[in-house]
Amino acid sequence: MVRSLILFLLLAGCATPKTMLVISKTAGYRHASIERGVKAVKTIAQDLNFTVHATKDTSTLCTETYDVVVFLNTSGAILTSEERDCLRSFVESGGGFMGIHSAADTEHDWPWYGETLLGAWFVSHPPVSQETLQVLDRTHPSTAHLNTEWNCTDEWYRYDRVPEKTTLLMTVHGHPIAWCKEIKKGKSFYTGRGHTKACFAEKAFIEHIKGGMEWVAQ
Image (cartoon, rainbow, N blue to C red; front, side):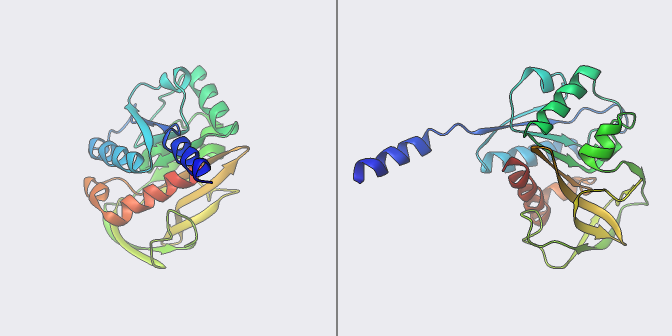
């Protein structure tokens, strides 16, 4: 019995950490919050025992092995056709994808990205403002720490559609702002927050991202 317990502990200690690829490449607007966001995501991922590679080089989608891919405030057409194929294959075969804020302003001419992987594309936004979010699902790891209402300041995107075949997690003024979905064997999580630098020092937002990571990595 004691030997079995020791062996279990040794094997647990030798477990290979999961890997995370954080991409922040932009071909359009580049958010001033990206650098702070990358640091925050790295810290969160390391707390979850992930090995993290943060880069602007999207070719890593085809040259590296990873468990979770994060598009952190990406924008514009950033992927080659080969990289698109690699990302789609990764998710559909069981990988986890997380999109933060302007990930929804990315790859507008790739239907699978906006319609299936993310669920919607960015259309417009009013000025940064403080608003009250309605938390629709408090059982999800990304929202379990929140009350039914969340007062916070950000840039609130409007999207071209209500995401289909998703679990809506939060809305603002009746518009979706965070959601998740399963795509074949993989998972996708998106949050519309993340425009301001201050977001990435906000405890509740950090817990929101952390929960999303945990979910897509399951």
